[in-house]
Length: 128
Ligand code: HEC
Image 1 (spheres, rainbow, N blue to C red):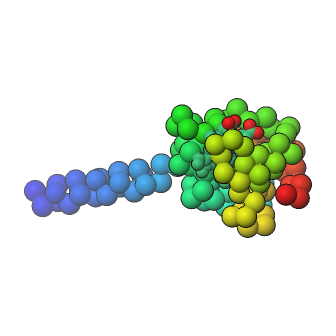
Image 2: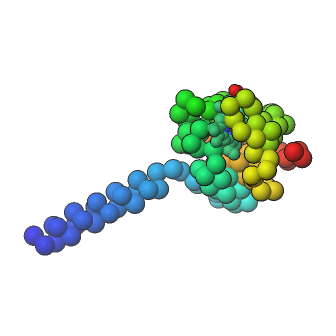
Image 3: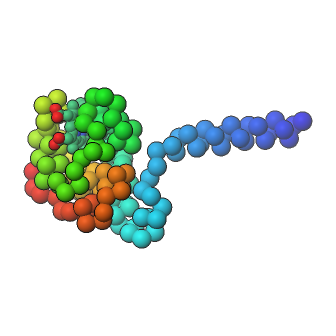
């Protein structure tokens, strides 16, 4: 009986931990093949959660406020930099808030969630 109670408690804990980790990090295959890119994407995920998610939704799935970033064109890094740095209509400008390198990280995160080819995700940032 005591064992059953302990087991149930263990299952509940495991389920809670699983729910807390519900947002996937970079894909495992990518982590193995290109560790530096996966690190960028993971850093970008954290920036995204703290700065962008409230308008753009969990895992880039729009919540109806911001643009659906799953549909952002992978070949248009310049547009990404311009829109994020300067803002666009209801979106505030981020150039004064983001630290150097964070645009690259966000771009890598978009690439990892959207499954973009490595060349697109690796494209260098243009200055603000
Ligand atoms: C206060 C809400 C809000 C926050 C926070 C926010 N955005 Fe946005 N974002 C928007 C809205 C609204 C649009 C749609 C703008 C339009 O087209 O009118 C948008 C559009 C965009 C676009 C598409 C721009 C284009 O060229 O069409 C990108 C890329 C983007 N956001 C990235 C980000 C990133 C990265 C962050 C975090 C650093 C962020 N946003 C944070 C509201 C927000």
